Image 1 (cartoon, each protein chain N blue to C red):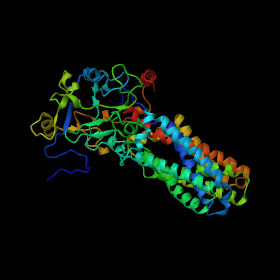
Image 2 (image 1 turned 90 degrees about the horizontal axis):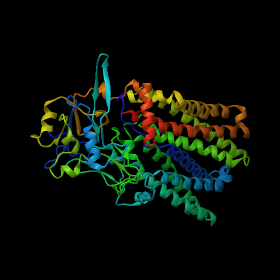
Image 3 (image 1 turned 45 degrees about the vertical axis):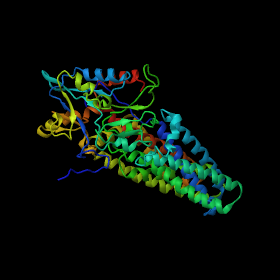
Image 4 (image 1 turned 45 degrees about the horizontal axis):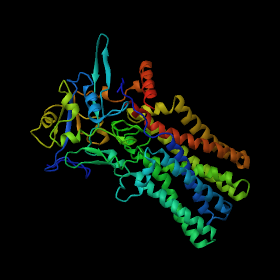
Length: 286
Length: 235
């Protein structure tokens, strides 16, 4: 409608974007810890990446529960009589719980130095970790009336964002411990940021050439305050600049890589926020 | 030939089942907001949220202008995205009647149903209410399920002074809604979403119901209204 006497609010607040950010990093860090069983260069990250992944998982769970208007009822999502498997949130809840359970088991097996079981749990945990960004992407994709969200790109974009943010955090954890690890993390950041960039170009294209809702959403996301966050911070400062930095000779040094990692983290948060909010603005006017 | 049914929860053409629908004749709506008031009274709907609402747009060029009203409510879709989206089955569709209802005791307040509704028909109840302990869960229009199951029409229909709202069973070919839908050109909101709504409009102009460029650059006075509304309703 053009004129208004009733206004609507965005259902999903920015808390969700923080959740997307923390759970994405948690998943990627667990993956880094798993890699340490198969690639020697990741060995220095095995414990530290896992511990941070676990802390972030706990924070993510608390964020998700605190955003519910009935936080005490979060247990309903574990009630088999209530679960509705047509909802990605139901799958996501189960995915989160199983990832948490595997993480706890992995912790104890690592403490026991049981290498065989730890290895198996690491692989299982990595598969569950992969499910986390995929389900968060599906959370958005399934809403057919939401511009930007309703695209098959979203789960893949969230996987790439998870990898890029996780690799950025891992590069801080790694510090200057190993030259080989340094090289691997730089590659991780470079390739996943490149994938994010390619998907964002595609997303902008389909949004700009979409229907009236998409077109208006494109206008909101590329101008004003949200445009500053999405284009300025998310794409230019948080994706393009770190890619260029990592390609430059300075980006191969530790200082350059740290700077790129910091920019990628800021960009990752900005992109998640603007995608979450951008998909909701136009609907508030309907 | 049987009707195309794409979803197992659709009640379209199911023998022996009722399929309630509302026809809103926009030519008759005078924008008195009596429907909103009746609904508020029927359900003790809190301040700032609405199960039904009547937005308007001023159309035409001065001096030939008029207000175009478009009463809105939950569309009780045949294939409701909110039912799909709810992780705990708090939102469900009643097979006989097609009502889309809410288990208040199950709702966890994740707002997935609100995000999935193309019609903004759902809202969050406030943390405290005077006459009921149903708080902090998502609520919506029920098509006055409690009245309809007792043979009464919904409160908004009964109170409409212009008889702009007509309610009945679409599966009954003799009902007034069936006759109107089959004999007059009707439209539903956002048919492209595939929700198969059960609220039909006579005289709906999509120029007035869909997003316009005005969304991007709203009149200053409307933006002030919006800010005032949000300020007073906890946004």
